[in-house]
Length: 423
Image 1 (cartoon, one colour):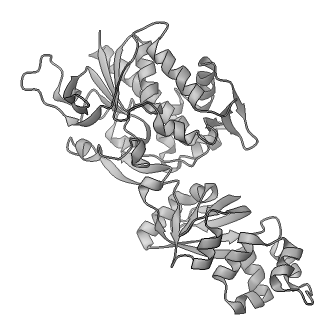
Image 2 (cartoon, helix red, strand yellow; image 1 turned 30 degrees about the vertical axis):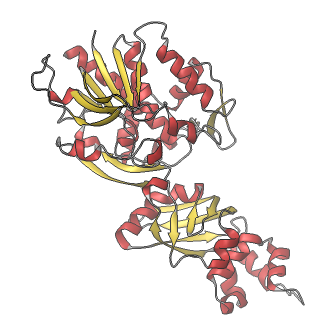
Image 3 (spheres, rainbow, N blue to C red; image 1 turned 60 degrees about the horizontal axis):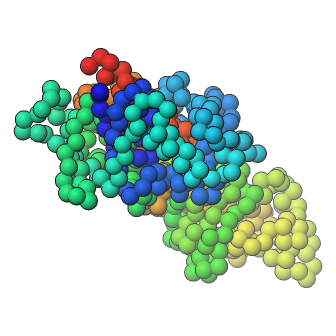
């Protein structure tokens, strides 16, 4: 019986293992962590966002410059496939008001338990062998290979019982990126692949937060860190000419900003900061009102009321929205109705640094698609396939990350089957 080693027990690795086991291939799945799917479980802590129900053309547009490569993966396993797969595990799903797809109970753990049960006790085919606390440490070249397998299919691992060498007919690497290292994704694999001639783009933060230029004042940071800007919009034009304009919400941090609306624009903000040292977006505190209406309300006679009371009464600007105006505008600007109205509709916020990659929800960069075949096999390492976040792509939150990870794992599994068939 053919044997395949899968390294990495996240969604991509588990999906590859499922495809292979279902085809009658013996699979050993090894992971450095004590248990399976740790980042998957943490990502589902507030409600597991499986995928998105928007039209296919809009869905694939979320993958930016890597749209052609991800779209090719979706020909075998797309967002509809995610829902069908969940249903096959006995997990019902529903579409939320924003189009996001969730398990009926919103939880990740029941889905993962059902998935592992199927992998360990399949109706047909060999069960997947799980080897936890096995950390991959690079390639192993045996002195006298017992088979005609090439050296690329031998791997070294650190285990609780000492060093271990593992040989297989093919390998699937699903090692993750470099965000949330405590959950297993630390990017340690990069030099090992580069040493074998694999082209790897630098790993960068994605869906990440940023530090504002010069930091917040002590007053603003102490009172408003952790509080959300709700019902706002941001506009940003990147130096490459990409225009981003969207409503939503985000959060102030002790040193800057983060949250869903920021994450959606993070790839362009990050790239401009790395290239030019800063990036400035404009914050609309009242996206439902035109500038003319805001100006009229600001200019409305306020009598003996303070400006803060006036803005709260006429425009419902209070709390963190009022605080950000005082934080970034001078007294003269606050006292000038036209400048104040313009700031309410387009307050410039300059970002000067990207938060560390380990804090990011995901990472960009990784193994270039150009270094692989269409079946995700490394061109320089026949028999070695890659899947998941370690590939060079990125996407916003909203189910896009998980869908592409599952799709790449599925396609890598299919690629291994085709490779073994030829071999």
